[in-house]
Amino acid sequence: MTGQYLLFEDDALPVLRRPPRTALWNLWHGCTRHSEGCLNCYVFRRDALHGIDSTAIRKTRDFLLPVQRNKAGAHVFPPGSFFYTCFTSDFLHPHCDAWRQEAWAVMRERADCHFLFLTKRIERFTDCLPPDWGDGYDNVTVGATCESQRQADFRLPFFKRCPLRHKIIIHEPLLTAMDISPWLDDGIEEVIAGGESGPAARPCRHEWLVSLRGQCERANVSFAFKQTGAVFVKDGRVYHIERRLQHSQAKKAGLDYRRKPGK
Ligand code: SF4
Image 1 (cartoon, rainbow, N blue to C red):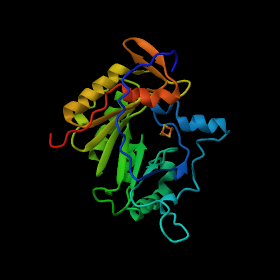
Image 2: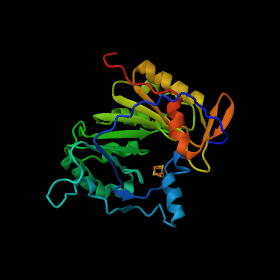
Image 3: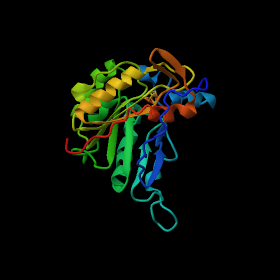
Image 4: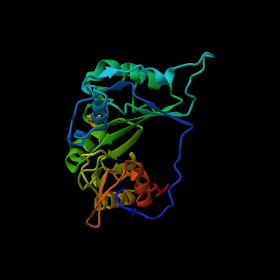
């Protein structure tokens, strides 16, 4: 963070609930920009440092990671493992259509684990499902990413119709004020918001987060302010925040809301 001051001074961080084991499962790598939230995509930024063309989308050697077994024949990842899936691509990218059925088969085989993927292409979801999907695998959570009101207005009506057991809404990077109240209901387990990171980050504003938190509280949907991003505006003041402090500063804002059972 620039300067010696902190944005938020309350040190009471929430206790994070963690599953037994978490892992990144980047089964394919690479993407193409799809909407305004992709402008400063971290995949492109990181690949550029190593001279890699991010648009050359390819399967990775981790494609079968969740079903790997050790010499004794047991799964390397124990039951209860949580896989952050496809975080260097978009699980619903059309380039990967031929590979996706095998990916679903891995998730089906590991019904004892949980998988989470985020997508900016939720409008493709129903065209990408396995034959036995029904109303969703219970071990899969999908996050629809909406970085602006324009994208929320387009994507959330699709998302509402998606057959899914677990749905979350992601506003990262949050680029505009949002009204998502028409789509907040029992079907949404959590809303997560955060600013943009990187040297060309666009600003995220505190009042946008306060508004989202209020919408979630009124609908009794959990809300998490995950990270401030690199440029954060509060009370008319612009803060440039170092990467290492972006998560802790967001937690100190005290905007998180936990859904109240039975409400
Ligand atoms: S969809 Fe995600 S991975 Fe693909 S370019 Fe956009 S931000 Fe990057």
